[in-house]
Image 1 (spheres, one colour):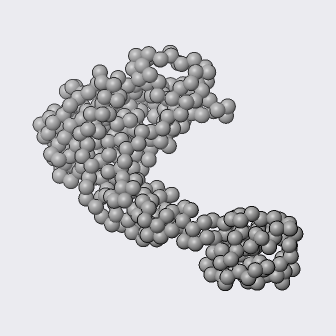
Image 2 (image 1 turned 135 degrees about the horizontal axis):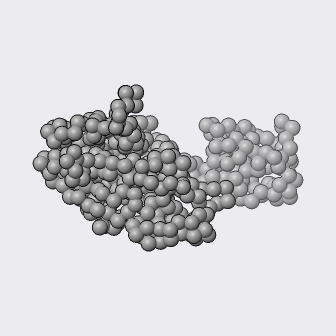
Image 3 (image 1 turned 180 degrees about the vertical axis):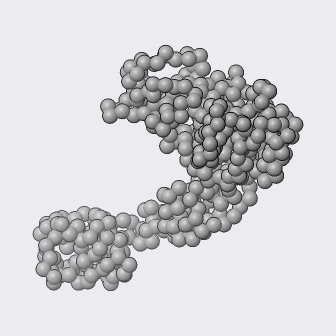
Length: 396
């Protein structure tokens, strides 16, 4: 069996990122991947400005600690003041530019004003409560490199330098379908032997979280011809085709022979739990990944293998999910495979384990805050330190 890292290395080596570029409004770029570096053509802040509501002064005029100065002007944010006359103070508001001649700001809580004058009950130092021009962003600097996946904070940074539009790589197109005569959609009559198709909802949600364009071919009848027809249709426009279940060697498992007939397929056994079986191949120009059918196995293998593959396919700069060393507050006997255990944080800063770690227990993924990456053959005792990967590192 392959290790998790061996399988992931193989997948990523075979991945060919999309290259088509489109320009979109920055307001609509959430989740997209930058195609080129974003460079600022201005300093941010553009000029020295105040961090506080208060009074702009010359520090030398307040050296005594209780100076009374006439108020020579009022400077709201968005307005430019006049040069500060020596021996005077300017009423100034957060974000307003520092007037020439002033070299400090005294917060209003340290002042007493009567309208015409202000008494400064503080000895300011030069530069106090002043944001310097360019202290956040320097003109001509790269603020966001190509390959950055844009989140809210990156969008804000782009807007801060005036970028109304950004060049991004096109969205990755992913086709999904699900095989099994036993599969039923919620809202339909559940026949004897039938199950509701939870994997369809999980996989679509995961793909949409990652910003993919999803083509959902629904539930495909258990026949070789039907499966081949859907594969051909999906491959016409998709960058990646994903299925769950149907890739073993049973008489009703038609995905494996269908992919082999329409393209190429490698079947792997991976030394992880849950999620041992994984298929990878290609149909036409589309990559193919076949996930296990059990709900938790499908979910976990998507997070561990499909997500990093998709991020590279999107052109995003790869980054391993962060794992945190945390205390286990439970006993676990371990397994011969690398386990990914559903756990959640408790009020004491440790981790509790969901009591049923079965591959069909989807409840564990809702209850949990993330996965414990437990090495093969490793028992866990209360107080041991384990590697915990939060779902927040894996779902987006």
